[in-house]
Image 1 (tube, rainbow, N blue to C red):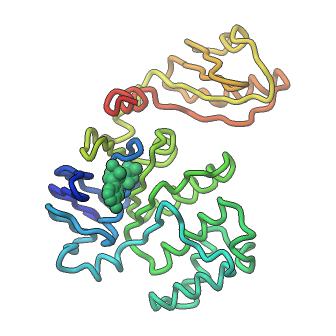
Image 2 (cartoon, protein in one colour; image 1 turned 135 degrees about the vertical axis):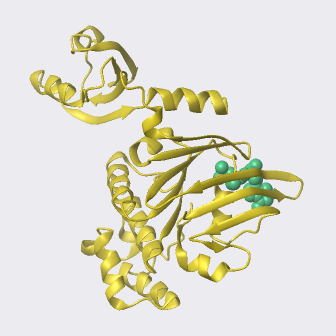
Image 3 (cartoon, rainbow, N blue to C red; image 1 turned 30 degrees about the vertical axis):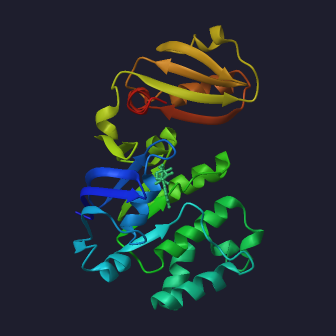
Length: 298
Ligand code: ADP
């Protein structure tokens, strides 16, 4: 196991931020730590990266005990904090080289992470010239410098525009093929887009720990589509196996299908046949949504 958390409690002053939390994460695995704001996600992440100490409980990362072997834990973990602390006046490569020296990382590894995170064309730019999406890549590159087995990513996709979001999700998914990724988010769709498993936290307590594939209703799916123009609901109801259409806002529609077949290609064909452009296309897990709402009163 890459992360083992057993009975962890964290108290700030007189406030219990985490109350007797236990969970495990394997390798490779991408686990989403999902919960509303204030649930205790950042606190847990800071504990796992040795920034904060627990009041009670045991933690092992990569087999190393966090209390007695924090140096080895630090070597095993790469961390992207919620507010990615970059030196905006530095050049990308300069920033990474500076941090690489702290870790004693080779020049070759710097080039490797630049390549891995898709930063090659931006490596000679100043960080303040980069978009938010590329700044997140720099944060990820930084977290990967010492080639840790475990990545802790605190709200890695917050504040990104839809295109940047897709790119960073894909990057995280590709890194997660070989590593353990534990990422926090308050947005359910992020879990669906990237994770194998979800751990839901509410008011400092774990209220669910489930594999995404176990949550999927085999015979129902919701496709969320944004067109460039208004479409009549009745028109969309002509799609095969469609059960329901909701125009949630603007030109965004949630279409429920009763089938296990992936219906996104039908929606594509529909758009093409009707000279519509698709601006966004996503699938939504109806079971995850209702579980999250129920457990967190959202
Ligand atoms: P999340 O990341 O899920 O939004 P946090 O871990 O940041 O939640 O916070 C959990 C709870 O602990 C919140 O009620 C928050 O106000 C409180 N908290 C977080 N950091 C501190 C701190 N340094 N001092 C006191 N309370 C804190």
